[in-house]
Image (cartoon, rainbow, N blue to C red):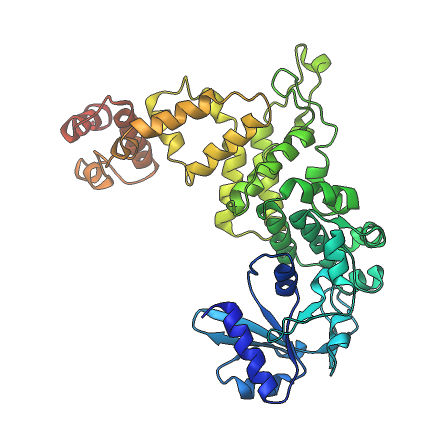
Length: 440
């Protein structure tokens, strides 16, 4: 059984019990576009308690909003009761809902016309009370009703308008666009977690460049990520960046992020040069060329702060910070000692570091010699040489009479460095090295 099959069964069961039931929202839009929906939602005039009666084992995930989750194996379908919303004092959620009996009333409180379609799964008839099919044909994102009212109800809809326009290659209808510009400063009413989720979707759905251009054009970008907005107009040395300023370079990289890319990689593309605006020094100041001394280190600090502001997990924050901090190290790989290179490629999720470097080069000078050098090293170097088992352990040091403490770490790192460089290959040699250098 597919999700569509399950959603169809739910509609048939609701109708057999005397209720109206339709596919609704994004799944109908996607079907109109010839795309396979990621999920299916059902709208009905049945009240939540009735839905739970008809589908034992269903979950009340949004009872106050009339939403019940029907679960079958690893599939789940949201079943929502027709409703109209009453007041949005927090700018995100309705203060109360009033259940409705007609699909037309339910559709009128939804966000965009392209998402306001309903579909009868039995006949294939599309119910269109808001002109959604015409806007799909015209490739337009248009708010249902008065745009200012829709965005006052839910500020997150402003970013969703950008996301749909970017994903489908649509234009935002002028009145809807103007309403976003007017309400952009209110985006801060949305929780950091929801902002992070929507921004991550913008970065990973395959249309990141257009999405962030629209964020800039609507005035949302400086509200959401002022550090990124400051990249515009920051010139770069033409011998390394013939493409233009920092924002042009970043947008070119965003364009190359494929759909489904890891979120941490996508965010590092956006933020890898975030340290350039505050470290900019002109050729007149440096005496030779434009420079951004320390921008990777400062950018890493800034990226970590952005991640904390948007409530990223600790693991994701550390990965994004590491990607930004290390993105310039590839220029040094030809001169790195074997131990240094091995430690470099041992960074967690190194494939993301490598891909960030490829995108960085491909969007600037185009030279991929360091990228190919590292790939060749990884192909030709056995994993056991990159991550060899330790020749000496902490227990070995203790048996030699050395006391545990910071000194232990220093000794073990020194031995590993010599091992990675190939100066120590056998355990006996490593133990003798420790005795001769550290044991009195």
